[in-house]
Image (cartoon, rainbow, N blue to C red; front, side, top):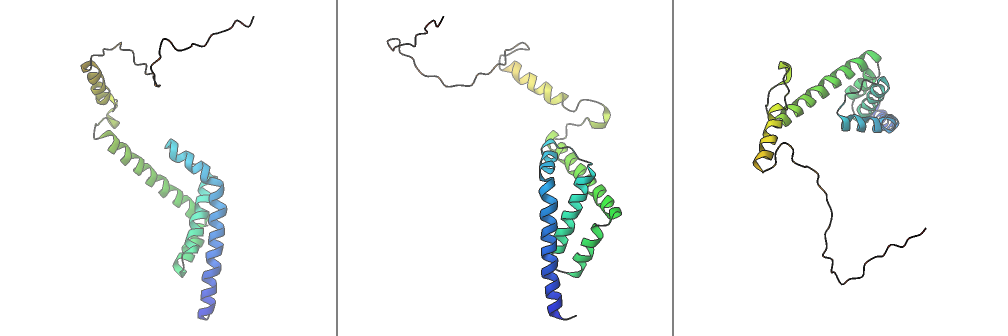
Length: 161
């Protein structure tokens, strides 16, 4: 095998990988965006298969024999299952780390207590300090105000009956 053959293989593998990435991601992007927005981990096998195809295509785009072998391995169903499990574990760990960071170490969790209880109590105390009580009206109306001059003409309503 000459260096020219290897070069052409890299070019062909790149375009095959590009085609795989395009075809697999175009159908699952809305689902991935929805999963990201809702924070839910999807177990849809079609999404998993298309993600594996995208990963395989990406690996084919990277020049090298090892990346090409890994791209072919990712296409094998048992490897896809292991890939999905690893991806779900990673996503679950990231979600948990994000929740822990947002909670600021409030505790709760496995003890069965409401982890938001301290936060809710602090918010109620702040409302009480601002003069509002438990029954304070919390309706907020957003709008613009302008001064109305009394000598300005007013709109008259006509009876259409």
